[in-house]
Image 1: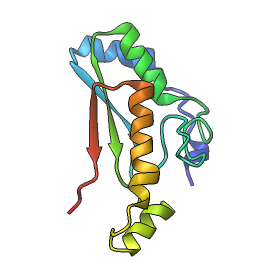
Image 2 (image 1 turned 90 degrees about the horizontal axis):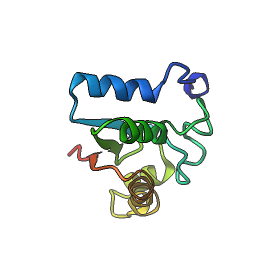
Image 3 (image 1 turned 30 degrees about the vertical axis):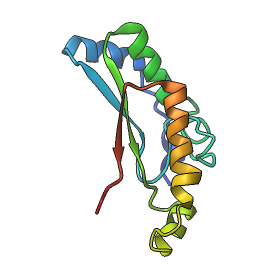
Length: 131
């Protein structure tokens, strides 16, 4: 378990925003959550498996969103995994041949609503069709 060791001590969103702007970037897409389920924001749906509760103790997503918006004219977007390989609800749906929809209804959709309403990304890159 590396999450406790993740500190993000060199993460400076203002510096990132300045570098992105200086490079001529038109948009930035941050990974909000990958397939293991650890979120870069304090999600109420992450069961304390997020950057606020474990590791850096800060809202890494919010910090970058604020820096991009306050320092640049760059479009802010988010990558968001639709799956979590080890989440009990996902595993239950998988066991049921995905005839149940526990994971999308109780985790994925509420989480997407949360990041859209809280961080207002212009782009959402959803990763979830492996078939």
